[in-house]
Image (cartoon, rainbow over the protein chains, first blue to last red):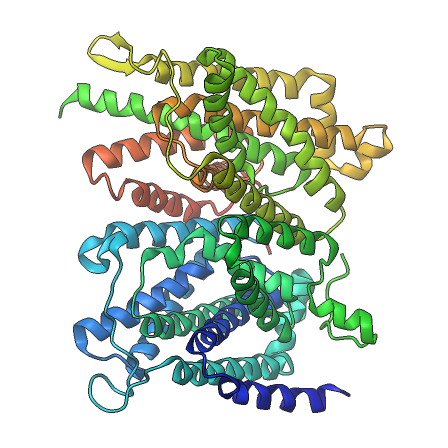
Length: 319
Length: 291
């Protein structure tokens, strides 16, 4: 079982990584990687465990970001209360939208979430009184413990450790979930919903539960993102980010825990490596994505299985 | 209440709605026949508009010929897109195909930005500045053209699918691909024809709308979004649904923009769709897979 040695090694490496270099830009990229990992892991709950494709996930990220920013600005509660509220608000939106959309499945669900995502994006763009419209919100204060005063997180290194902690905590939660009764209900629902229902699983409730958890975590990621970058615009909810998140999950490997984290790394690293190419960058990126989807449908994680012969894929549907 | 203004809003809404219908028909056709959700569909709309622009500029032909050339060229590109991105994946999971089309969409948008430049362009049309007057209603000729061409094309498409041999083969494939293949339907040909029709329809919409609005390489994501909204409203895979859904979305948006708030017109359009979906989750004319 190599993962018994591998996992602590990876965690130690991740903890030591910021001290390998004093380059703050490198630290910035590490924070982005962790933020996207958290988002991709949350989307993975929907894509990998429930087995539905959501095109509205960036909207919940945006809701979290705007909630945290507005709470910080209007009530001076930038910090843990802001993040908790970001999770609650994003989760509430997730509950309402999930309640409506999860009644249908497959492609219809994907498009319906895309529609909801666009509504939230449009409203954010036009509700200038609340969100300042396309200008976005700037000068968001750094993340403190409890509002202003007291210790506040500054610098990329601090945010890196915060996001790393969140990623490890959520990854562990996903792992624990998959080995629990509820987790098995998730997998049963994904594999064969009618059969799962016949075993007494409330399919709709299980799906809704997964959807709400995923959106609430996306809200937390949004809150941290807003405090870290200090600027947010409605663009964080645009189709570009939706596509990016889905790319991370699928290219990394859906239904696994390592997959979305690797996918996020590839996304951040590849865009950085191709930065010198200017506008050609996204063309190459799109070509790589398409090629990886066509030639490696199981994601990068499936390469590991091909090399070692170990079954890392948790009971995938044989379509 | 001012009835002239109301009638004018409805007329404008119907014209906008017809462009939505043209976009959505291709989407819904590809879904109903091949069970593919094509995220790159909007990019063919974008290409249609840009090809019209460049055909008129570089070849020096008039607007009508440029639009026809652009439509045919994009329809030919549809063959290529099918051979490279869709046909090889026909046996894969539906997520894989969806992502492949998302990759194609990103490729075309960013490639378009690279080739055409990111600055907005206007397509010149002799019909854009002259008007048609009916009573007190005023509509530009271009908008009349959009509506008439849209209606004629949809009628022709309907006849083609109902009565031609290929149309029957497409309907058979939609019902059961394996069964159709067993009775001698050439599935490969059905794929090709479906994509040619869908991409051609999207390009035609782009070529028609080009003179009434600015065009830019990222317009494809707007188009595909509108297409999807219409398709959800009407029901995925239903052509009458696309027609009713598109026209109603156009009219709803025009009325909301005219009487409530221009900025929120789109959001109000979406909100009405959600109300419809609460009542019928599968769309007005759709048949949903339910759990």
